[in-house]
Length: 301
Image 1 (tube, helix red, strand yellow):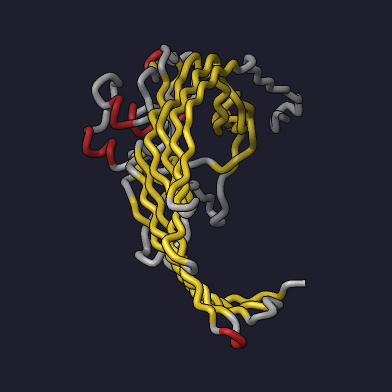
Image 2: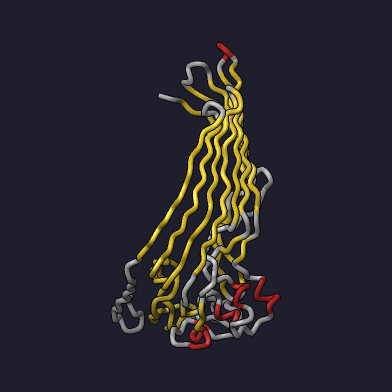
């Protein structure tokens, strides 16, 4: 990175250790009713040593010519209405990898695929997953420290600030619901020389989970936050359980040379967050698509 004031070029290097993984799996498969019903079940256990965890964060600092901001984060303007610029110490933000000393992922999976009659099919799965940091992971708290600790920006990015030292042992890994379930049903109508109509319905449910590794609500008592618990939970990284409903109806002629389909996804208009971060007490992130529906068509060559 180039220092805007001096022109000096600084190189920031990150490093991480190899990841070691031990995985065990035990499963079974069975078929019933002349192979119309297929069942699968599995137990899995994965033990990580120095698990490689990638995230976005500050890896250093450099002086940059940037707008001067007031205490509310708004740019200060000069007499001509232009932002006042000055050389300021800014973080170098990068997507980098660090090591989690130890973590385990274990769970159960159950799958089924059933054809109860000639033109119908029901399939799905259910899972239980326990994914957690299992060894002491002493690291710098990096989830909106300015807001939670009442720090200046410079203090919040200081890797030597002992106030920010935390142990993430016992935290759940991100985006890993404890329970999930999914079921799909399809039915095909044979219209003879007029072709086929295929109906599809899907119901998917995911348990509550965390969108980050920080698990904010687990640290309300062991971190010296200056804001109230209620205010802290306003920027929580916990995601509620949700149910997603999708369906479609597709027509294709006997030749199957083309098709036309009407569909609806996220029929219940669930608000689902897939990425989460926060800055100065303002929650932000990315979300899944709201309810959407339409018509699509295609050709088979």
